[in-house]
Amino acid sequence: MASLTEIIEALMTPSLPVILIGILVVVAAPVLLHLVLSCSATYTTPPTVLLLGSSGAGKTCLLTLLERGSHPCQTHTSQAVQSVELNASTNSASKHSFRNHDDSSGTHTKFLLVDTPGHGKLRPVALGKLARAEKLCAIVFMLDAAALSERHALADTASYLYHVLLHLQKKASAKSGKSSVPLLVAANKMDLFTALPATVVKAQLEDELTRIRASKSKALLDSGVGNEDIGSEEHDDWLGEYGSKRFAFDQMQEFDLDVDVIGGSVLAEGADVDKWWWWIAQRV
Image 1 (spheres, rainbow, N blue to C red):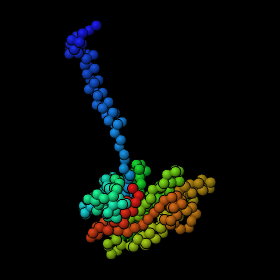
Image 2: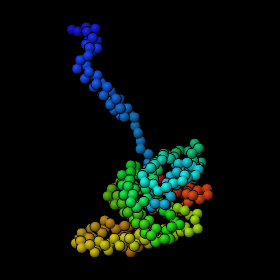
Image 3: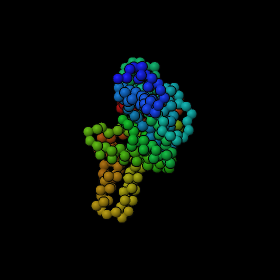
Image 4: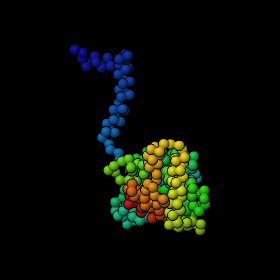
């Protein structure tokens, strides 16, 4: 039987087996350590609130305002998804205000606020994030209330919102036992003279969504698809109450989807976003 001295001498003597064993130890040790640590440590993904909306609606400004708690930074058209971790509370002293960075009272919940690009060419990126977001608990769809009176702005905003609502509707119809994701239409720039009131924003969006729904239904009828296929496909792609003449946000409750329209302003003096913040705080 080899003595301890002989074993040490064998290990210290350069040879192919010794070199291979040494390489194996060097490579395997970090991997084993990582596996041990990852199994012992638990990481919880915080709830996610997704910011959607057309370019120029104020999504990135809102993100930086809520992150800083004071004033938003100068922004430009976003080309990538970005997120910040925030804390919200429903029982703290400052529960109704986003300026809660120094508030230690009550219970605070961490959540991720995820900003998405709003440019038309980058919209698939945002919709992809909507489809893949982990622990999605709420959606904030921002729009420019001061530009909504312009035909092209209304059409673009409503078209984007149509795809978002239809995605949520299909997702709600396909699953069971889980609550659906609520959506806030945040009508931004209410401090501007040309801004439409939240009630008018809601009515105009419902009218435009009605027009889009009818247009898509007519396009399907004109496509030459068989009547049976048309009935099935039209029902699946019909937003809101099937067969209704006019779309209304209340129809989304049929799919357990709550839609609220609330006005505010990111860049107003004093930043009028507390109603949006309280809406988010109650859902994370």
